[in-house]
Image (cartoon, rainbow, N blue to C red; front, side, top):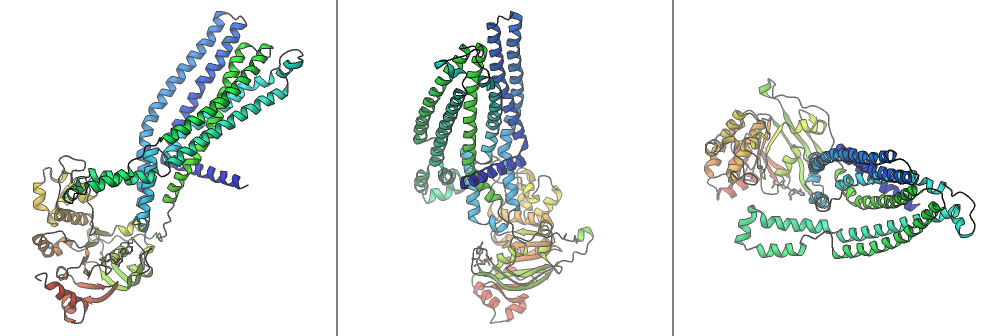
Length: 623
Ligand code: ADP
C-alpha cells in the first residue's frame, strides 16, 4: 500500500515535470516523440520483410516477387532516414534553445518572486543547486527532454514486438507429438518461456536499478561540491578581484580552497566497476534466456509450426521485446532518480508570494500628461520586523509627504532609513500599520503600477555591461536626446563628450573589448541619470553623493531643485549637511522617527538627536 502511494507520488512528480517542460518548450517534446516514432519503424519493417523474403525463398517464389520485399525494405528505410534527418535538424536547434528557455523561465520566476525570498541566501543556494545539477549532469527539466525519445521508442517497440510475436505462441506444429517433442505445442512450455522472459527482464531491471543507484549515490554531493569549486575558479579568473588577490597574496589560499572542492568527474572508478559487474550478470542471464528461446523457436520451426522466415522474425522480435521492456524500466528508474532534482525546482518555483496583490490602477497624474500630479504618501503608525528577525527595524513610524516636496531622511547607520524606503517601494509589507497613497492602502494597488511611480538610486545601485544609453534608459531602444539631457542634469555631460562612442559606448570590459571602465563617482552619476530618465513622480536617492568628489557633490546639491524638478524627492543621507536644502527632515534613531521639521527648527532643539548629530559631524566636515 505504502509502496503504491510512493509510486503514485513519483509518477505525479514526473507528470508535473513534463507539464513544466511543455510550458517551457513544447516543440522539443513534439519533435523528440516524432523522431522516436520514426526510428522505431525501420528495424521492425526490416525484420518483418526480411522474414517474408526468407519465407518467400523457402516457398520458391519468383525473383520479381522476392524483389518487392527487398524494395520495400530499402524504400521504407530511405524514407525514414530522410524524415529522421529533417526532424533531427529541428531537434538540434530546439535542444540548444532549451537551455536558453529554461534560463528565461527561471528569470521570469525570479522577477515575480517575493523580494523577501530573493534577498534570502538560501534562495540563491537553491537556484545554484538546480543549475549545477542541470549544467554539470543534465538533471531536472533537461533529463525529462532527453527521456522523451527513449520513452516513446520503447512503448512503440513493445507494442510492435508483442503484435509480431503472437504467432510464436498461437501457431501449432501439425500432427501429434509424444514424449520429449510434446513440449513444442504444450501451453506449459509457452508459460515457461514467458516466465523465463520475465526472469530475464527482472534481472535486467534489477541490475540497471543497482547501477543507477551506485551512480546517484556517487554523484549526490557533486552539485554542492562543484558549486563551491566554480566559485573559487571564478574568483581566480575574475579581473575585478585581481587587485586584491595580488596585494594580499590570496592566490595560495584560494587555490588550496579550490583543491579541496575540485570539480569532480561524473564517472568515478566505483561507477565504472559497478557497471561492469552488473553488465556481467545481465549478459549471463541473457545467454540462458536466448539459449532456451532459440531451442524453443528452432524446435517449433523444425516441427513445421512456421517457416524459416518466422524463425528469424520471432528471434528478432523477442530480443527487441526484452530490450524494450528493460529500457522502459530503466527510463522509469532514471526519471524517478531525477525526481529529487525536479522537487528542488518545484520548491523553488512554488515559493509562496504572501504579499497582497492589489488590482487598483494608480491614477496617472503627472504634469506632463496634463494631470494635477497630486500624490500624497502617508506612513500611518508603521512597524516592521524582517522575516528572520526578532527585532523591529522600524517602530511606530508616522509621516506624510506630498508630491513636489523634498523629504530628507537622516540618521546613523542601522537607524532604519533603508528599511523605510524598502517599505515605501513595497519590497516588503509592514508588519503593523499601513502605508497610504492618496488615502488608499498601497497593498490595494496593482503591484507593477505602484512600482512605476518610483525611481530609486539605491546605495548599492548596479549598472550593467550594456551601452551607456541603454543603462540610462534601462531599455534597448530609447530617446537619445532625453538620455543626453538626463546625463547632463546628473553632471555627466562633460564625461559624455569624452566617451569614444558617445551613448553607444559599452560600460565595463566584461563582453566588449572597447568597453569603458568608469569610476564609482561616474557610475553614481549614470545611476542618477537613469533615475531621472524613468520620469516617475517620486524619486528616492539613497546616499546619492557618497561616491562623488566634493566638487561633484556640491554641484548635485546646488542643482538639486533643477535636477529633481517637480517630483517628490526622498533624500537619504547620514551626512546632515547634505540635507539642509530639504523642506522637511525626518530624523531616524533606532527604527523611530524622533524628530521632524526643517533644518532651522531641528537645530534649535539643543536636546534633539539632530542637534547632536549635526555637531558631532561638524568637526569632520566644514558645514
Ligand atoms: P540604515 O539604512 O539606516 O543604515 P537599515 O534600514 O539598513 O538602516 O537597517 C535597520 C535595521 O534593520 C538594522 O538593525 C539592520 O541590521 C536591520 N536589517 C536591515 N536589513 C535586514 C535584513 N535583510 N534582515 C534582517 N535585518 C535587517
